[in-house]
Figure 1: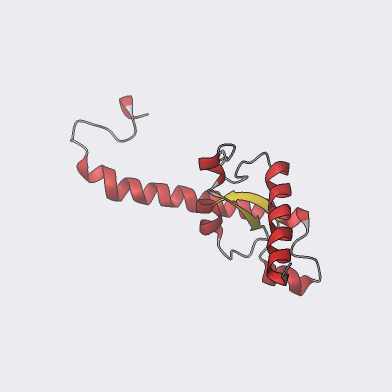
Figure 2: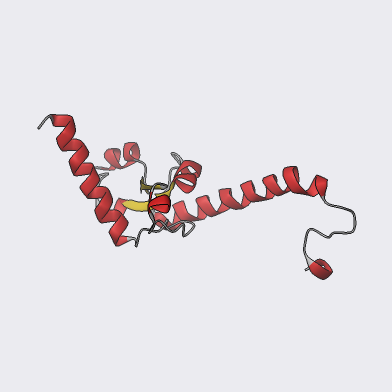
Length: 124
């Protein structure tokens, strides 16, 4: 077996262990990856980015630094310099909310008839 095959195999086993631990769900938004179609959108995220963990002397691949994330949340988080999971989760939720509000304002509000209140029935 070639070196890259061993590395890929070890990474696959590590990823599967993280997915099982997290119930095949994104820890940030709850995306369900228990079906093949859902699972295809899951990735393993380093809560604290690898380059920051290496400086601190800890192992970046330690299970406490790995979580299941959907592609959207992992992409949103990017290389955010999180101190811990709580910090990373707050940043992802902030970015998701910001993105949702921008998409609503750009895509839907301009097309709403004047008689429809975007806050819902009776302005709630």
